[in-house]
Length: 326
Image 1: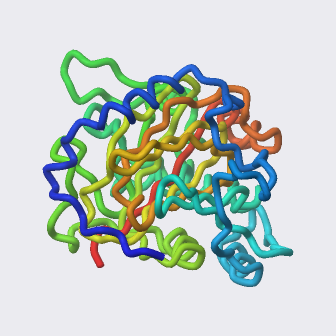
Image 2: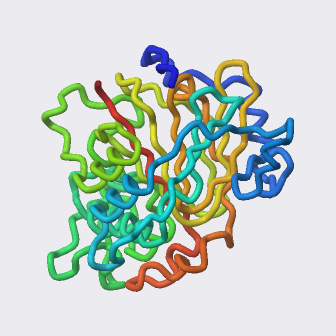
């Protein structure tokens, strides 16, 4: 694999995306998932076709995947066995962009969701978009998580003229992101310099990512989307490491755009359980999410979790993991 170029200057985090990426994003904000411009890994043209847009440079071996999933599993979902190697597709038009369709089996997806949204969301060291506006104490031990909180639970507004936030509205409408490990400053677009002050990255998720992708998880952003939400074109340039960026999709389907330099970008349909790896030149690629498609959450996930049935039916949860330092 070609090594990633050195990180751009931190000031580039504030740069505007190029016109062709903005246009591609705008063109697909109302685009159907089946548009001819969309690369769909469940419906690729024949490999012999001259228009075949990807190659399969490598795989994740079945024994490696099985061991990673078994180590990650918990008593809720059981152990998952992988029968065959998992192909890794390289997107030809964006050097370094890799897509791994259907990487995580359903049981592993549910386990990951429970760890992220029951355990890690409830840990006050992992900040959310709500901490700047509300007092969010951790749930009491006999409750366990926000998803198990009584419906009368409310969170006090920090401003004198603000309204308190009911837990239902917090989970259904207001919660947009959670940061794990390195706590990203969204205003300054940088991480703290002193790593000793950072909360420890969840060890089991770190081990899963390391086993599958070979990076050291030091920071992650868990984005929670609803249909109609978008993620504007941007680049992740705040990390000092050139290690790949790993993105895992859970829940509703979406369109993902990535492009390098002046080259034409690619639009990829991502489904629950898919992983996208941005490595090499693509590590610093412009990327965006122009569409979250309602009604596309897998049937087996729609009623998750049992403590708040139907919540995932209208959600896309994206785990975006990065290594901050080499």
